[in-house]
Amino acid sequence: MATRHSRSAARLMMAPAVILLLGWMLVPLTMTVFFSFKQYLPMRGDSLERGLDWVGFENYARFIGSSSFWPSVQATLMIVGGVLVITVALGILLAILLDQPFWGQGVVRILVIAPFFVMPTVSALVWKNMFMDPVNGMFAHLWRFFGAQPVSWMSDASVQSIIIIVSWQWLPFATLILLTAIQSLDSEQLEAAEMDGAPVLSRFLHIVLPHLGRAITIVILIQTIFLLSIFAEIFVTTGGSFGTRTLTYLIFQRVVDSQNIGLGSAGGVYAIILANIIALFLMRIVGKNLDR
Amino acid sequence: MARAVSTPRKIATTAVAWTIGLLIFFPIYWTILTSFKTEAQAIANPPLFWGFDFTLENYAVVQERSNYMRFLWNSVIIAGGSTLLGILVAVPAAWSMAFVPSRRTKDILLWMLSTKMLPAVGVLYPISLLFVQFGLLDTRIGLILVLMLINLPIIVWMLYTYFKEIPGEILEAARMDGAGLRQEILYVLTPMAIPGIASTVLLNVILAWNEAFWTLNLTAASAAPLTAFIASYSSPEGLFYAKLSAASTMAIAPILILGWFSQKQLVRGLTFGAVK
Image 1 (cartoon, each protein chain N blue to C red):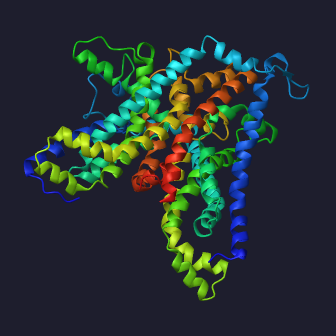
Image 2 (cartoon, helix red, strand yellow):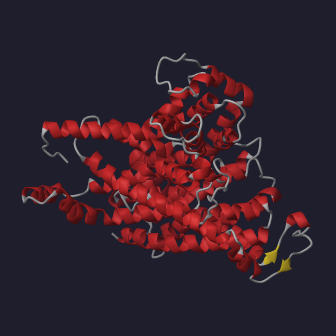
Image 3 (cartoon, chains in turn purple, cyan):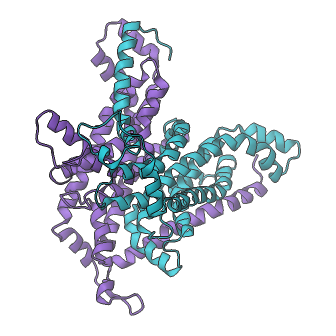
């Protein structure tokens, strides 16, 4: 088997990837943690050359204590939660549907998956203008056709709008993964249950859903990690106003708009901790899969 | 799964599935359609599905006003460059982990994955600062580096799962026949690994093409790719739906086509092999 020679060669081949990722992780992370303990307002003359004041945990306390913190947590939870519920629920239904035999399966699959390949700035702006615009948008035309007052989506239903846009982008991902999982379901078991006269709902609850459990968990974890850091969809639509300022967006504004690097860095550390807690669960599932 | 299904049921399923499929695809279809209308027709009520004057004018206007080709070229260079660089770094790493595994291989793989979970906004300032220090701000090489690094874990993982499927006996047989490490890689492994590498390249070009945090935050005028160009339509002047549609269509068309080829790899790549 592997000789000592090939072992050291293997280590050498792994080195570039490991060193690059180690640097990519450690250098900026150390800097963020460092800044989070400093008062650092470049606009007011603070600079690295002249040295920064150590402020202990003040930035951490101020980030949580600020009046925009809890609304941003709420916005984050609503957007992430809303998108998860919609994509997982519709994803399961769509996966079951696409698994049935029908004409043109390949084409419909392509149609359903397509939104995933649309870049975030395009999907956000197309939805915002061509569908959700209160005067010229498709929805406004539709509402007026039925005699209703068009909705000012981006201001009056801003969080819902973001949820709709992001759900449209991520539904294909959930569907595709759940479809892949459903296709590995033993169809004989289902047919046997069908012959025994088990109704559709109980077949779904007792056979399909348990089988999908692991895939659903994976969809939720991976999507959560990506959804926690959605940025472009908010950047080009509401710019964080009308209650759509998520945690990610709040940190972005602290760093870029108000140029309070210390405060933004403390927020960044919170975000990193949060992401790592979720990542831990994901890693355990993925790690278990590696052993098989 | 070949299940016997009655014809009426198949017809019903077909109708429902096509309706839902077309509904989900509709925003893309509508964007493409609108790109061929005049600005006045683009906002017409009731919306025009047919019978409008087909025009290519918007495409010409978008190119003329903002030099669209430069953004497109930036996207191509950044997505292609970061993927290529990532593959160069990842192939040896994935190879050694798949064929010369050690006790720590699993830990290293999971650790690599964990770097992917780092929220970008948490390191926005440090990266900007380093970019300023090294003169990388608004350069294509800077973005190539960053996008390579954020996608490297996915590239390593995908290659690893593909390499794992290559039976080790073949390598042993090659070694018995006296093949050295170089021949082993060049003549035995590479031909078998090409499909896996190709799928990995495909998925990562798509991910890099659509990346919209670093491309928006680290570019200004000269290195901005299509994601940033489209974002400039967020504060438009006058009628712009047809122009927005034309710009969007050109930005998503190449990736839609690539994406259709990569459906299967999408699942494997984005679940890190947890769902196949």
